[in-house]
Length: 119
Ligand SMILES: Nc1ncnc2c1ncn2[C@@H]1O[C@H](COP(=O)(O)OP(=O)(O)OP(=O)(O)O)[C@@H](O)[C@H]1O
Image (tube, rainbow, N blue to C red; front, side, top):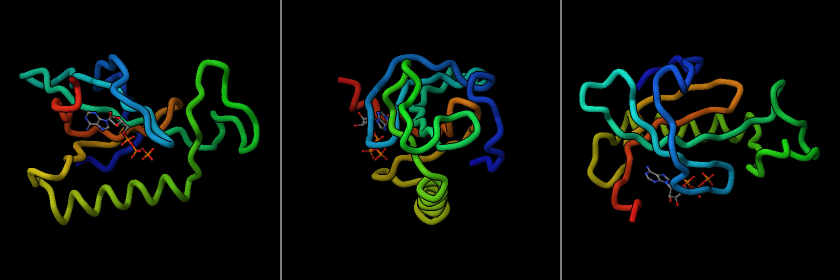
């Protein structure tokens, strides 16, 4: 897993339909552009409070009803995911975290795609 979170999501992945939504996230399907086999991934995006985002207590932009996450919660999520990757992955019962990207749209966790959830 790379540690440079400033990589642009759209440089590396083609992002397509929404797979699901969590309390602080939206998860979309993606394809890694440079991979030989067009590797399919799940992209979990969390939007943090910050210079590009509305401040806490204000409404989100009209194009998004996604809840925003604090830096502390986001840092904790990343730490937990990285700890799991370092201690457990690869494991058949644990979703692998391939990479992390960050841009003005949020922090994007690039996850192993669970095709069984696609219906
Ligand atoms: N790796 C994946 N592959 C396929 N679909 C996924 C994957 N991860 C999440 N999803 C889809 O996105 C939905 C939300 O997942 P998410 O992990 O964001 O839930 P959550 O843990 O409740 O969220 P949060 O961390 O924001 O509280 C899931 O119910 C599922 O439909």
